[in-house]
Image (tube, rainbow, N blue to C red; front, side, top):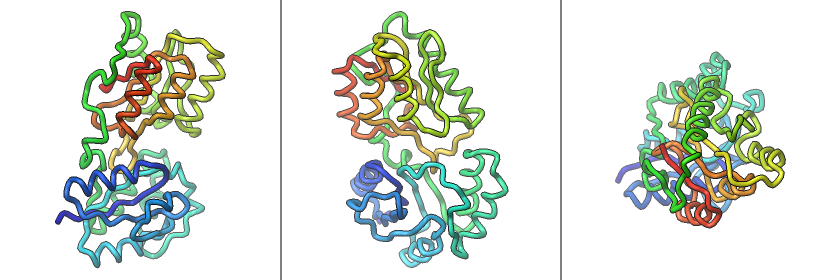
Length: 265
């Protein structure tokens, strides 16, 4: 039996990844991050941020060396983390790399892997939870959409290169870029800006050039589609194979009903 420890933050993605892993023959040791995981997940172990020593001890007992991380925890303030002794040596490396979220994430992975573990991106193990390349919906881009799509992708990658965010909304101009507030709050700003305008513009969420997809994985869901529809936008652009889709069938159905296209590139 293949063994893996699944560290779980907030929302539904941990449920989907857990079930997908088990369906693919994995023995999954579920670890909930206190203050973030959904209690309905019923994890095998609960730890606080900074309490990785307990998880390491339990993983060693079970012969688990492969780890994966899913679910939102935002960008926690390191000053709020009370590390145990095991975690201190890992966090020391992270504290040296506070130039941005991406550099800190890579340092965190390097610190954990120096302890004899291997971290793998959940999307590599759960291809059923991501989009293959191509248009996913019955709704297709119009002849006027490709130039807006390419600009949105370009702008998303520009802000990603500066470790600002991943998501952008582009119409005739750049309407919004994602910063610390996250994708959902950015789209709410766009809804206010648009004031009922419909039928143009796109939302793009592309991975950052230096983003470490082993612990920082983008995702979209039905709420994303509904917010895009409320903003009167034409479509959604995401990366193929690296962006999780929460409830894929529902996402596609809602997009089709709202006459929104979804493209994975």
